[in-house]
Length: 136
Image (cartoon, rainbow, N blue to C red):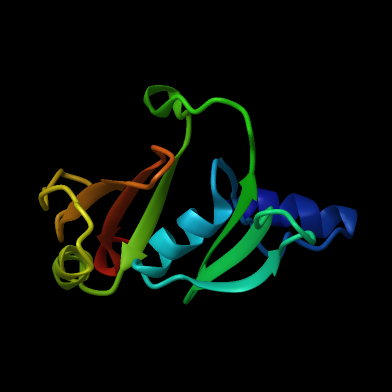
């Protein structure tokens, strides 16, 4: 990471300010409602007149995600990306999702996540792994 910073400074180009993933979803409104249960807030949306919502920009603290409507067929088994989220107190965060009637996986403790980690899938089959901020 230090090398990238050095090389961008050498060329006079400032480093990027952020990276926000954009996921293709079948129903932006449904996905916005689902992600709201995880604590995300829709900061911006785009809904053309007479059509369903086409795009949304969500935020939860320092985490951002954009959702864009796509008519292409979903194949949850072939989602080639996963989203890793860091929660302050992963066990309590998992319990809050259970209270929202979501179905997070059990809390596990792999070697890289000694404070715990769990998995949950969104309505389009995207995998979200949630770990504790203590392991960042």
